[in-house]
Amino acid sequence: MRTSTVIKALLAATAVTPLLCQAESTLQTGGGALTATAHVDFQITIPKFLFLRVGTGTGTAAGAWATNGAIDPIAFAPTPAQLGTGPLAATPASGDLGNGTETAVVVGNGGDVTFSSATAGPLGDGSGDSISFATITTAAAHNTTGTTLAAPALADGATTTTTLTSVGKIVQQDAQWTYKYTNATIPPAGTYGGVNANNSRVTYTASVL
Image (cartoon, rainbow, N blue to C red; front, side, top):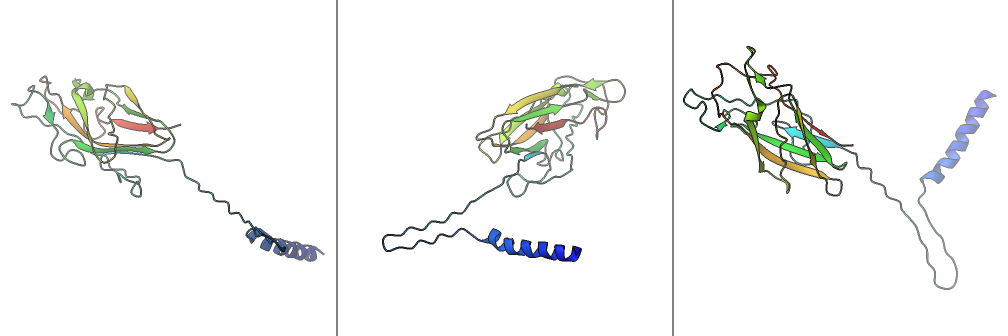
């Protein structure tokens, strides 16, 4: 009895299925002018996404965006003669483009993007001395898109936030950021910061509602 019920249910489903697969059709008959119509419905589902790259990363254009965990070091190594003499470029190996220059990209399709930088405090040397992040400037140069991505300023133990205004709910901005050390004073000897040490790390965050 149970088997018979299952078979009947399968036969009923099989009978209905062809109707679900058929496209619309119209048959008109008559001796005069005839008009037949049919309709097709289309749907495109676009995923909401947000892409942020600062440094090595992966991709600057659609089709190449991907997650990449590489973190670039930006290092300054003034000689004794250079100390306190004005703006100093980073070392040649600093940044994915060298000499303290990083590729920076923000792309999203969910409206305005909140973009921020945050630090845990000034760069320390582990011995009580420090150098403020205010002494590190970021200059943004045009890269590939029509809008140059401005960098949020760096501040000690604080978050600096900017808003990237969307056009038609799209944000697509990039730049080449070049970091420089203002080098206006002579600090105590030591190594300030490092690889995720002594408040060295800056966290950039892009977010969209």
